[in-house]
Length: 138
Image (cartoon, rainbow, N blue to C red):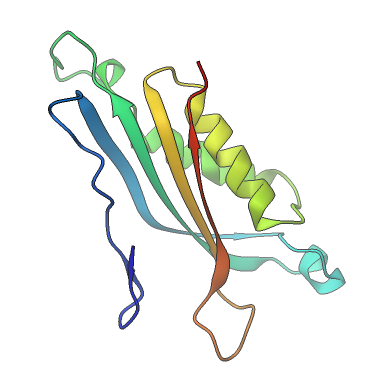
């Protein structure tokens, strides 16, 4: 959800004690990458903003203050950074799908919502982009 007056992305209600669901999120990850179908977009990197919400099934055992007990947002952010730096992507939709797929490889992640915004597409708009939500297929 976005508050249009300030372009702030607010967290979705995902955390739920009754279903043992934890909400892991990354807000406003600002990266520069080659993304787009036009010639100039294939040659000149552009700014993108990524927001991510993950629904993570909590394990039946208690978290023991070890990174191995949780989905690490640092590892997720590093994976996104590597993906953006790796190569040119034509569509923001493709990048969003790749990010969701990466997150869903962790069996604890039940759902991934990915929002990608290109920040310099239009002079008269703050951003343009896409948001997707993907669920774990059983």
